[in-house]
Length: 383
Image 1 (cartoon, helix red, strand yellow):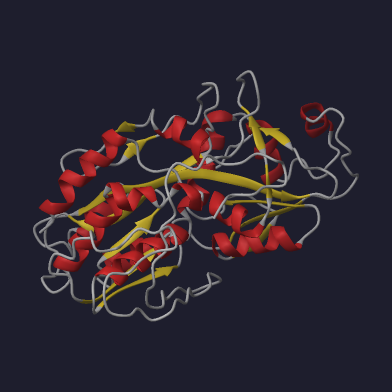
Image 2 (cartoon, rainbow, N blue to C red; image 1 turned 90 degrees about the vertical axis):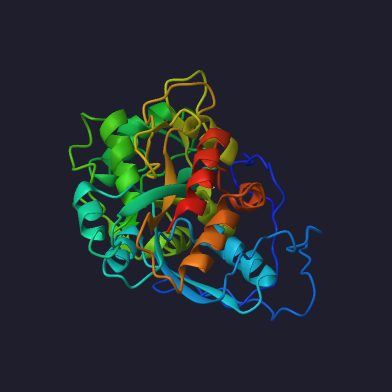
């Protein structure tokens, strides 16, 4: 799958997209279930010609449940297909219910791991100790990528915004497409005198939180809301459930704007905003440009925790600053004995070189090598 976008900017394809046969991946909310043909005996071969035989199943068996981030759902779809194709009788059931919902289920002991677009808060770590007997929940970064600002505006294919205008649009301070602030950033564009239809997430979302963190750092005078909030903090706008719900709303609504992981823009052929960061040229939302920003991330976690600190204020050439790193949340100790082998085998695959290679053509940024190496060393130690 090649990323195609109306504005003619194409994401860099680093690795091959591996799509193997698998069982049905269950999701809820507005994220559609993914159906694939039943696998047959023997090694499974993908459309790219790679086999799944080199995925180590390592005692994986039965079903494990997981839930959380809808931003990582499209990556999870690929990983689950490949892993289930290689490991007979294994089912990974991931529900894309949003980061907040996933963490809640994890801390209630309902899932083996949670997907989250933001690291656990201190109080969430403390809560996890009730479930992780003798241990705690840790943040394992697994995939990164740009948060795209997608829009639908007839006749405008190359929209440029900066952090200040993005903040004012989503805070209902800029309400018309031909507002002087937007016009100044887009000289020559035929901006209509029509109302901006801004869409945000209705569910608790790490994507919302990362957008808030970016705006709080890059446009502090224009975004006064709590950057730690996973719930939408501003008044006005329209709400939709999950990344797929926001993307669908933008796709179907003239004059719309919203935010979601880049793969949803690609899948729905939604134009995306280039951000004026103060660099010599506006920066497009591509995996390559996101990788430049993520590579500068610093590890702030300790021990088995690999929580990252991102630089949302970067002005580096070609670095797209509105990024997220999405984590898998698991117990470092105290995992359930019946699900531990499958949990470790699956996470070993997702962070492996092969697991990371499938991400680029799907609109995600693979982990920088140094960060991936840290996670690869930690996963086998989960107990």
